[in-house]
Length: 530
Image 1 (cartoon, rainbow, N blue to C red):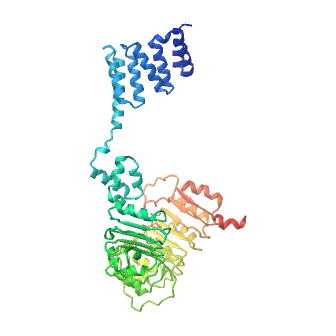
Image 2: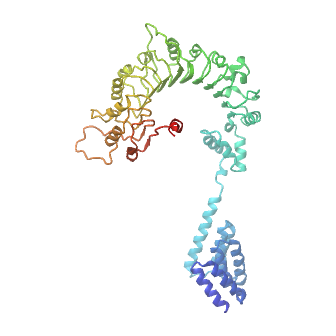
Image 3: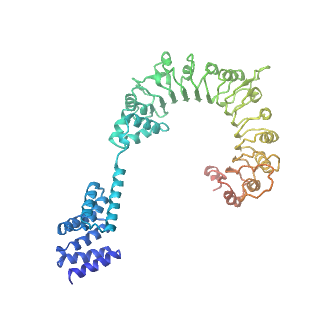
């Protein structure tokens, strides 16, 4: 069989995408005299191109151009192959040489080659490093914005390229957050202080950090704004009580199980804005010396006497967040004529695990309170809240004792409520859901979207089904003259630890609400049945 016959069969196989068979035929064509014909090499180059072997295809294209330098085919295929391996200069040169060998009247092939050159130019534009042309000041500002939410992103930035590495390494603001653990703390602190030029803005001392002597030499304490310590004495690291004035610009301080915290809090003229104490010893009188607090969080500490608490709140009238999760103490009788107090900016309040004998809601006015959480309080008097008409968006009652009627009346006076949590309470949650279903005018809690009634044994699945039928209908019913706006759809319901929820009702409930949680018991709690 002649080489022309083998070439014809090879082209047929190529059209049918039988590339292996086509390669066999074209190789036989080369063995029987086709090695002097450029069309045979061009066919095998096409097969190699389809098989994803650009190097072999370029070798055959080289033979095509050698045997037929005046023909355009070899140059055109070479241009496509060079584009595939990202050799853009060679691809452009081959395309120009192919255009030079085309007939002026061959407009179709000229159009295809022009499109190929446009594709090469587009690939070239994508490879241009435009970011590197920006001034270093702008790149630095971008890096700081990227690393601001999470300081660890600096490692991602400096690993991109050598250029980025050098910029990140020489930008002190990127190294202004120092987190010390038990992993090479001395070397870690030395590198961070050096790269930040000593201007550490945030300092975190984790509990895993050993109590060994830590050298923070070179750190400019006046630049420190946020300090969070866990089981560490910040006074020791600063250099003793006499050196605490170095922290004159500190804005936020968080201490957990930290020793000698009372020494830190006794520094005169404090300027903190956010203070969080968890399991530390201190005196409430020391907190009365603060004047600029916007957030105060105290957990696992002795409950203050009511006059002490009032003194702290009077000294910090601009509080926006107040969290008191104190240990129970001996009940103290409030003064006969207690003062009234207004906290105009307070939007978040949490009171937990206290005897709560104070007339808190009676004496303190909070016109902007949006989040109210009460947890593990033996007796809560909600009646003072009825008169204040608070703009609450979240109300959470966890393990508290209160009259049902007071809560239902409060819900009726809070149309802005979007999230309601009544958990670990018996004999209340089911009545609350029934009230939400009731046909009262106006609708109770029309803006409610999230409901949590976990660990309430009185809750039944039927009342939840009725609530979702009313609040989350499958389709909006046409109303000629609506008397009042439709209530918001319930987005999530949490009913963990509620044995009254029937198992066969759970799939239907999940079709009506975006998120529904109903965990009857944890593995540990249910293990005794196995």
